[in-house]
View (cartoon, one colour):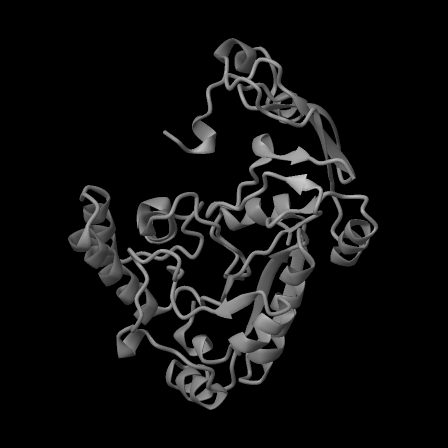
Amino acid sequence: MAMPFFSAVDPAYVNSHSEAYIDTHPMGSGPFMLQSYIAGRDYVLVRNPHYFKKGIPYLNKIVFYINNSPTAVLFHFEQGKTGMISANQGGIPALEYAINKQAIVRIMSGLAIPANQIIPPSEPAGYEKVLPKNAQYAYNPALAKKLLAKAGYPHGFSTTIYTDNSTPTDLKIAEAAQQMFAQIGVHAKVNQTSWNTFLTNNATGKQNIYVLEWLADFPDPSDLLNTMFNSNEAPQNDSTNYSNPQVDALLNKGALMPAGPARDSVYKQAQNIIMSQAPWIPLVFPMYAAAFQPWVKGDYLNPNLEDSLQHMWIAKH
């Protein structure tokens, strides 16, 4: 119930307007109100005078500039035109051995660490320091070729890697994977579409290989494992159509258990089975960084990457 999509809204307002209208004329009880939105350029928030916390927010107005060029974003920041750069800017088991994850880290300018599992190290309830041997993979193109031949593809196969155009790194990662797959005889073309088109198509479960990032809604292994690997979530969230009755049973069991070591163990068991079958190739765990001008005060980063806008204020400069 604490999730953003459970925010209170007036049903009369929702019922009297179209979804398209509400997208650009939202209502709610937050610290700011949307004053204007120009697609692809900017959106403007203004202070909500009726916010339930007296004296908050401190700022009267915030302008968010939309720019897909990291260079331009940095240039505007260095010129002092912007106050902050938000932290939000920015399978087939044979194939596990074909991906050089250090190369992906370089694509992300070093702001990532290679991923060897689904749960990130920031979530100790599900993260495993040492995975079972049948769930461990390393970059090994020669072994990938042998396993492809063993699987019935001695000459590789042709496929498509789907990605979106929301960030420059998505296409770079897809193209890097394309080159790595080519080394083991897997010929992939890259299909890049808009974010909305990509997401709509991905929800059908028909994009066999795709590049996608998941940010946890809350710090618990269920948000990652149950959402994307329980067969009752296919194909919209479980877009790989992964289905394993044993994993389903573990995830359903974990959902009803109280927090503690016993529950942690259930999710670790589920993850180990998933990794041993490799419906995903975990690439990297991104590391997020934000930049603030010295005159922006009251800022902090929380684990869900939500900006503390209502607590920020501007010093004289």
